[in-house]
Amino acid sequence: MTRPGVIDKLNGVMEPPGQRSPVVRFGVFECDVRSGELRKQGRKIRLEGQPVQILIKLLARPGEVIPREELQQELWPADTHVNFEHSLNAAVKRLRQALGDSPSNPRFVETLARRGYRFIAPVTLTTATISNEAAMPRGIEWLAVLPFENVGADPETEYLSEGLTESVINGLSQRPGLRVMARSTVFRYKDTSEDPRVVGRRLNVQAVLLGRVRQRGAAVVVDAELVDVENGWRLWGEQYCRKLDEIFGVEEEISREIAEKLHLRLSSELKTRWALRHAPTGEAYQNYLKGRYHWNRLTGDGLTKGIEYFQQAIHKDSNYAPAYAGLADCYNVMGFYGVAPAAEVMPKAKAAALRALEIDDELAEAHTALASAIKVWDWEWAGAEREYRRALELNPNYALGCRAYAAHLCALGRTEEALLRIERAHEMEPMSLPISMEVAWNLYMARKYDRAVEQAAKTLELEPRFASAQHILGLAYEQKGQYEEAVAALQKALEPEGHPATLAALGHVLALAGRRSEAAEMLDRLQKISRQSHVSPYWFALVHEGLGDNAASLEALKQAYAERDVWLVWSRVDPRLDGLKGEPGFEELLRRIGLLPDLSAKSAVR
Figure (cartoon, rainbow, N blue to C red):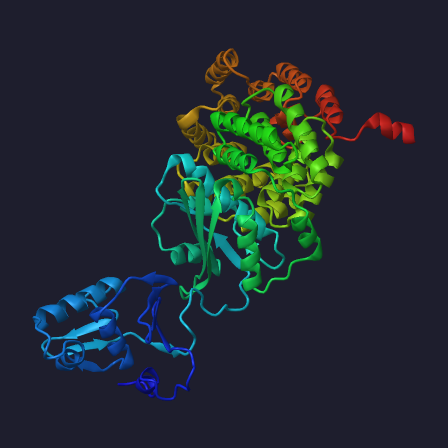
């Protein structure tokens, strides 16, 4: 049955002179019936000639059968010498291909044998000009920036698409009133062919930002579009063409234009900050993006390459603060992961973070990097807390900062505060493996072992081969007294990489399970590894504690103290060191690193 008024409107009746052309919307498509332009989710679909004319004819009378004879009279006049049957069938076939429709199971165009065709999908008629953008719905508060596509898949330009994605995420996350999914969550969907709307619904956001990056010689073309997850309409879109050495600032333009489209107000403080932001040289910015690309790999080789590129960026522009912050991040992670001794990398991390803040005191990443460095190197707990808080004041949506602050609180034994912070980070990055794993780690350190097992299992559902989650699962099973399950989980965690931390954890649980000779084997393996690369003394202390050798455990911890080992920050709350509690040497160690009150200071006050 024909919708009242549709034919008249499409034919121009009731359309005052000068009024914009009618647009018919159906599914994820929209068609300007005057120009014949067809778009899918804002993207123009190539469709010309008789196929688009057939579509317009069908859209004018949705639900009605349009006879084949009528189509012949209007689109194939009698004086045109063509094979009408063949031409009509070919035109309808091209129309269906453009719509992704099927003749056997149609969603849009239904064929009635020997009679004609009927448009069967619901249609909506507007008088708005067809455009790159649909009307912006109010109330969009959750958004995901999906990884920008590297058109051509050139490995040499992968840093550019990844770097721009991360920069746009960082820019948008600072906008008040907008919650933006963080990098580690959205990059799980890199190189996926999934419908962006399906991904958006899975992430529970209202809109997704899509991007494509193409390098043409010395020029870069960036296409970006914002898509409504609910209905697929394109809400905003723009193309940016820049010389490669002028690409800096594109992410700011994108985030600013989206914020304007979403009617988000920018605080005067942020306006000033962005206006005064230092514009690096083109080469410095490219090296910075390459540095972040390698840093995000979180491997020893990736961190080394990241340092090289950040140093090159600094060489090209000595006043580029983000490059110093990136350098600090690399050194910090090297220390935390045991890639290098703390004494070798942590002073460098601290120096780089301080230099970044000397240039730009409002860089959240630099405050977080400094906090992490002075926490584990100087054991300056109060100062570290100030830096973490400042980072989150500058960027409340900074998931990495929130995650690092949670670890800080957890190490101090402020476990309930820590759990609130890590859950906040998890809320920002629900698909992040590291954050999901760290929720389990914080639960373990809070001695909520049942919940830690449950969270580690959830993380393994996301990635069954994630060794860190297997590791924590084993730790939690151990504290529950389920030694067989603990051993199985830790042995599985060893399979992909055999990290010394897991060897130590396995040695500890084997000792508790009465398998002392096997625990001693873990000590031997750690010793062999230490002859080739750095092994934290903390890990030796754990195995000795499991074997009940408190003297050897304390000696290893003293060595860790002499090296200012990063793992000592966990010594107050780690359940595996409970056997040392009450030992004078252990209590003194905790006081020296600021994890217990200084008794001499209290006595002096009295």
